[in-house]
Image 1 (cartoon, rainbow, N blue to C red):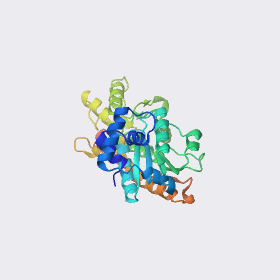
Image 2 (cartoon, rainbow, N blue to C red; image 1 turned 90 degrees about the vertical axis):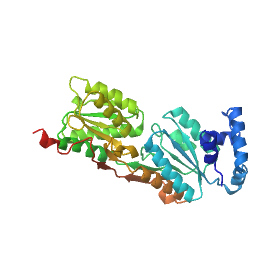
Image 3 (cartoon, rainbow, N blue to C red; image 1 turned 45 degrees about the horizontal axis):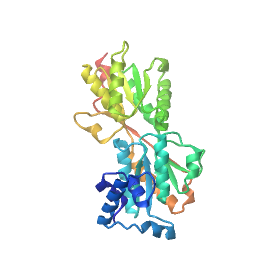
Image 4 (cartoon, helix red, strand yellow; image 1 turned 180 degrees about the vertical axis):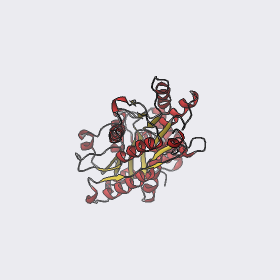
Length: 338
C-alpha cells in the first residue's frame, strides 16, 4: 500500500506537506501541490482512503511530531515508532517543529486536520492546557512529564539517575573542576537535565556557584564554541558533562585544537549514546538513553490507547539509562595523578 511517506520521499518534502497538498489545506505552493498530486497518481495512491475513514472513523494513520529530524536521538525514536506502527497496519505522518512553538502548533493542526487516529509528540516547550484540550485523539508525550494532564500518557527517561551517574564517575576518576554544557534553555528536557545536574553536584558536595553552567543549542557548534570559551578561561574545567553527544563532539574538537589531552587533562561525558559515539575515532563516554525503547514503548502505548484501553490513560512510563565508559574519561586517572 502506498503511503504519504512514500510520496514525501520521492517529492523531497515532509509528510505534512504531502498531507496539505492532497487534502486541499492552506499553505501549499501551487506548483508543489501539482507535483505531489502527480507523484501520488503515478504511484497509485488511493485518495479516497480519507473519505472511507469518515465512515469507519479511522484513517489508519498516526501523527508523529518531533522537534528535530537531523539529531540521531530523534531519528532513532522515529525509526522504532514507524516499525511498530507499520507492523500494526498503520502509516505515520511525520512532522517537525524545528524547536519552534509556532511551527509546532501549525504542524499539530495539520495532523488533526488529516484525521490521524493518534498522536505522539515531543514538545519543544512546556506542555500547555490549550494544546492538550484541542487534541481529541489519544495522545502520548515524551520529553517531559506532568500530573496536570490525566488524559495524557507519558514516556520519559530518569534524568536524575543519568546525571548522578555522570557526576559520580568524573569525581571517581579524579576530575575536580566540573562544568555542565546543557541544551536549549526553553526545552523541558534540557531544564530537567540541568536541575538533575545541580542536584547531583550538590549531593557530591560540589560548590554550584563555582561551576561553569551554560545552556545553548543541541549542536556540535554549540559545544565547540562553549568548549573554546571555557577551556581558554583562567580557571578551565578538567571535566565537562554535556547535554547530548553533539555538544560533546564539539567540546572534543575544541580540546583537540587547543592541544588539551582527553582524557588525561580533560574528561568529557555525552548524553544519548548515538550511533557514532562508539566509532573508534570518537569512543565517547556517554549516558546511553534507550532511544529505541522510547519509540517502541511510546508507540505500543499509543496503539493500546487507540484501541480503547482506558487503563493506559495518564500512565507515566519511566525508562532507565546507563553510563557507558569509553575513552573520553579515564577510570585510572586517580592513580596516575597521585
